[in-house]
Amino acid sequence: MATGQTFDIVVVGAGPAGLAAAIEAAKRGARTLVVDENNKPGGQLFKQIHKFFGSHEHRAGVRGYDIGRQLLDEAAKCGVEVWLDAVVHGLFDSRLAVLHAGRQVTVQAGRIILATGASENAVAFPGSTLPGVMGAGAIQTMINVHRVLPGKRFVMLGSGNVGLIVCYQLMQAGAEVLAVVEAMPSIGGYGVHAAKIRRAGVPILVGTTISRVVGQGKVEAVVLATLGPDGRIDPQSERTLAADTVGLAVGLTPLTELAWMAGCEFFFSPKLGGHLPLHDENMLTSLPYLYVAGDITGVEEASTAMEEGRLAGIAAAESLGLVEAAAAATDKAAVRQRIDVLRSGPFGEGRRLAKAEILQQQALRSGQGGESWKA
Amino acid sequence: MRVEKHPVLGDREVGRLVTISVDGAEIEAVEGEPIAAALLAQGMIVMRRTPRFGEPRGVFCGIGRCTDCAMTVDGVPNVRTCVTPVKAGMVITSNLKGGGE
Image (cartoon, rainbow over all chains, first blue to last red; front, side, top):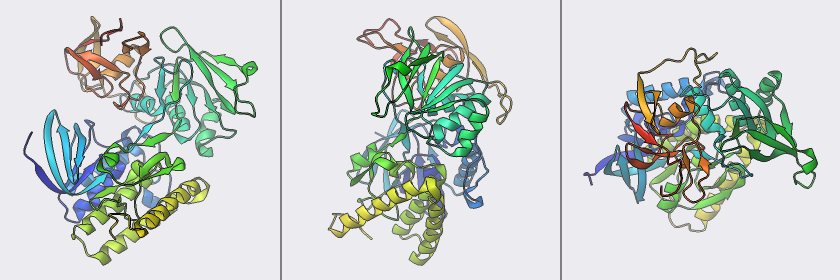
């Protein structure tokens, strides 16, 4: 075991939330470390080759990988230390056990910010374990980051933004997309993304699901079926597409293992992806040294993740006495205002309400003498 | 298949090409890319078979969590090929017979 090192703030996860958190903390004088298990920083930003939405201050119109580069440059300028190939496998209060490039290291943190992100959901159907059935995000990484097409003819399950965007990017990479399949009666994602792939001739089949995938040792065909009013597959409606790859875009689940290990309080939010650490308006969990930001606090998108990261970074630095309360309050108010804008509109409404429920629950539990909530 | 041309990303920048061995076959790979990417580029999509029933498995999550892409790399079993970078001369085997992984 290597000797321990000490940092004011340790951020777990070098994606949009973690990098934004580290930048804000370091700017305020915190000695800041970011650890990430991958051998490249940026989380999922570098596979996002589409232009972001939102307003100018959310860097709308800028592509994900450019935002990733900007964050890395800024983090380097602020003196943030970044460890890659560094897996946090243990939390002992504010001490972290890290396997860094094959070596065991312990790190003592003043504050910890968990920005571990989310992982893709799977869905089971006959044949779903065959090679050629992949997460939509895995396909996106292969085509946009590694420049490899994992197949030629694709079917996508799920018409949320991930499913729609990955279909468009598959076509940009030269693949054929046979269909998007959606069990719900309407398309899940933004109309603008749906329109782009429909214009390219890809049908989006709502009220439809994958009945099974067949093939000898790999995907050779996908059998689709219509769902009846009772939600069951109508066997008469089955038809077959000659696809060699199936993408699953059926939502994400927050990666919460470290938060469970730390022992903070949790809340179940179906809308935001499942069990997530309960947190207050400063992104503080029920443990006084533990903050959270990004998809671990409920699955949204990169723009909100960055803003939540900023909030956590400012609040954590403030709690260490590195900034005046008044200055921190002004900075946090500006971030919260931008978050409200990102959660406005018909698509943001559900997330806004689900997030408000978390804060209500937190206020309730801390008001009831929840053991360690500190203002 | 490699994505050589791209309307947004431009032409593929080819890194340093190296040779790796997969189940005895020599294949070309880009140094530093995940082993799984090098295999998929060659159309090799079966990474392993399950120990009990010998069912084929391939890349599923691509982020090192599901372990469906695990192979034996330079004698080390159960290496997640989707998050392990290619190095020149790597010897990779797939346990394709199943059993005793």
